[in-house]
Length: 103
Length: 152
Image (tube, rainbow over all chains, first blue to last red; front, side, top):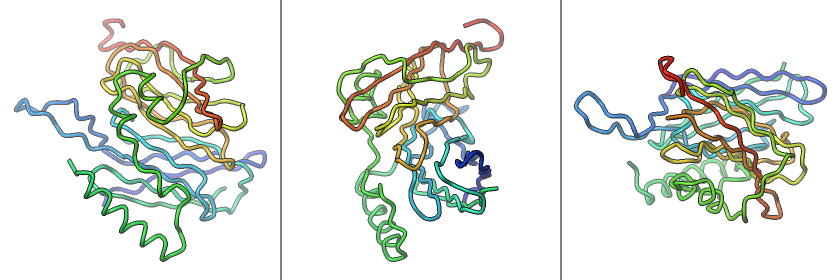
């Protein structure tokens, strides 16, 4: 299991700005190791964001998203105390879900 | 590398689990669009999502640095004030695979997302908004990548 995500969700003016920092190697598949062999790509493929259990955004990511990915988006009509859940899946089948409360 | 069958089987299992807990996400049926991520140019990648011809639009905004000192971490954002956005794409023209990320936008979020991308060299970066009616609107911006202070 991968390390936990850091999620910060702050309400402002009826919306909530959600910032997520995921912990993932995001290997591009372009790099070679010291023996000259290509390091296989290993990256997050799908991200799902939910607000109080309802999916508000999904994303598909390629290997070009930077290591330890950062994601920011704004949920409309979200208020303090609501739950934001983020889930990711990578191309090795690993996944992780973390939840945060909007402050 | 997992093959497609493995992925599909695993998705089916996950879908089953989610369905049984009542957490079935709205987009669970949307399979990862490998063609879009394998595309070697911006137009092909956008086409893989079923959108029409690309049109430059001042209603789309791409945010990013003019000069990125470290190509491994380049903050890029895509946003628009237009209504009826289905998907937002962030692309880097000169990367080995141009598409960085695709976001399915719903009514519940602003069409405004930011993430961080890797860039191999100085390149134009694109924000593409695919609208509900199939139009593909884009904005682009040049980002220079300086490595070791040698200039872009």
